[in-house]
Length: 123
Image (tube, rainbow, N blue to C red):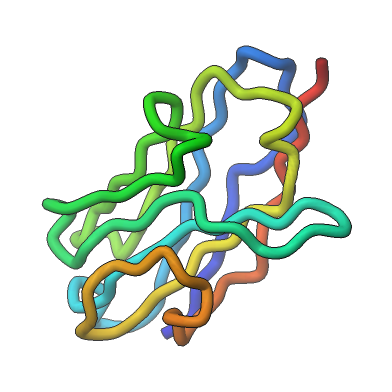
């Protein structure tokens, strides 16, 4: 599967962005999807993950209550709604997919990665 992330940009603290990740292929609904972030000089970190149906979601503690992951299997797309953004959310955000497996918060568990989209939050 090929993944294309979009929706990043520059926003003021307290603002919102919605990231999208469009997947190619006809088996998107069999993939668990994840979002990860990587700030300059830091390791890639887990943000959120969702199972194949959208019925199960998990979040990093740092984004709980502010970010929402969702998916539309008819459109082969997963979303990350980011509200109440903080300067510390500034990073490149990557979407990832793993086939026929449960969601995971480990970047080592994912087989496919998008190219990343930059999110910059100004104070």
